[in-house]
Amino acid sequence: DGGITQSPKYLFRKEGQNVTLSCEQNLNHDAMYWYRQDPGQGLRLIYYSQIVNDFQKGDIAEGYSVSREKKESFPLTVTSAQKNPTAFYLCASSTPSKGEGQPQHFGDGTRLSIL
Amino acid sequence: QKEVEQNSGPLSVPEGAIASLNCTYSDRVSQSFFWYRQYSGKSPELIMSIYSNGDKEDGRFTAQLNKASQYVSLLIRDSQPSDSATYLCAVNWSGGSNYKLTFGKGTLLTVNP
Image (tube, rainbow over all chains, first blue to last red; front, top):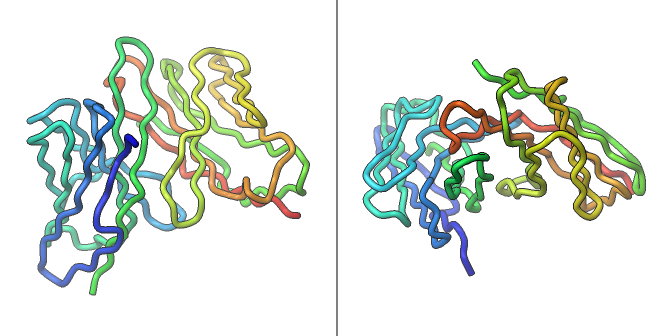
């Protein structure tokens, strides 16, 4: 079955530590996205990538980094510079179209907490 | 700043009733609209897409789009307790990247048995 796999499901970060969240998709989608969701809040875009080896900052990119070396993979690193990393992190993907915007499909998410 | 506004709720309806969820957006050039359902602790799930003015029906769900008034709504007929979730409205803005969506904060729906 095609889908988006995020791992781990739960992650704990120590002070000063960088952690990496994995996102893999087998939908053959070109575009991938990372969102952060805080309790009672909507989704805020961290980074997105439209094509391999290219990515753009979203609305809240500070303290995060990404790479896009393969079409299937878009890992997110939460660096020690992100002082409030506790949140639900969601990875999504979509396929481009010439006209209308396309819906995004989400993985199951990773919950990150500070130890 | 392009915005998507939703009433946070909670919206409480009895089982079997029609639930009406509304979403307004700030930019007239938006072109694509999506409704997602998010159960507590889970990721969003796409339930409806709508691209042109009017109604679009899919089972118990109807999406309504009025671009002149800049709102999109979701009607859930014969509401069931299993429909209790947060409903997120998302908008794609034309004229920019057709990859990006802007999400509202969501409306919490509770269907009471």
